[in-house]
Length: 278
Image 1 (cartoon, rainbow, N blue to C red):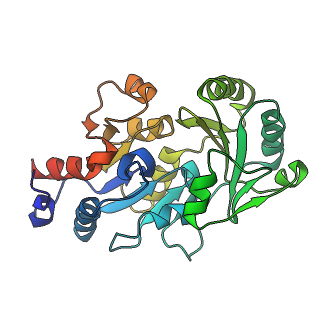
Image 2 (cartoon, rainbow, N blue to C red):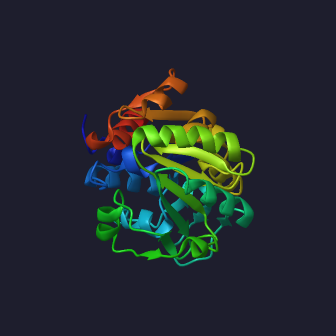
Image 3 (cartoon, one colour):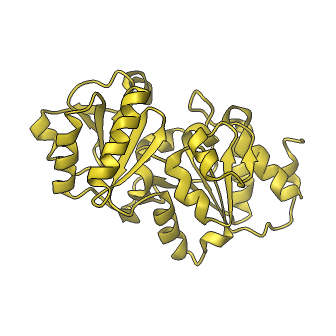
């Protein structure tokens, strides 16, 4: 496939929005976006396509991985808890966990062998350094603040991240769904991570809310994802695409969805290029 083919076409696609997950989807295994991917997305943006990035990351953390783009992107961060069109503008949408629910979940988390990180407007928060997250934090240039257990319960969190071994994560996920499924949205963003946000909040609900204000429907939207926290979004858009490297559970839930090449092979850009050339 000609890597410049998308940039050379002038016909308008029948879609109005593209929503893309970051880690495991747009970004390679080192968390980087390729020049080719940036070129394809820049071209679609110039053609008035709405480009949205939907991620579990913090807004500031997400934006540092998108610096190759020639435009300022809209970012749906923390699994749909926050939407920002510009880094310095007020949020379009902001949802924090109810303090009572957050406190109960944090109390439960003390009984499982998983590390806890809270995501808030101020950044990351924890009681102790996260061995799974330490290198990532160091590379990000962002700060993780450390608190007592009581102090952590006072944080107005967009998201609670639990992280640990695969077996412990599976067990804790089932328990969290059973205990807190009515007061929080619990999803898995990898085999080792659990994301917890406000009830009925996810990437799909946030994207639907935002696009409706642009007079765009989910049926006019293409979306890409690789994890179970992408399930609602991929199930609801007009054209949901599963990455070849996606979690096995996601592929089992969406067996008839088309697949894009893996993230380390510019899968999103290659799929978009081919889609708009047909």
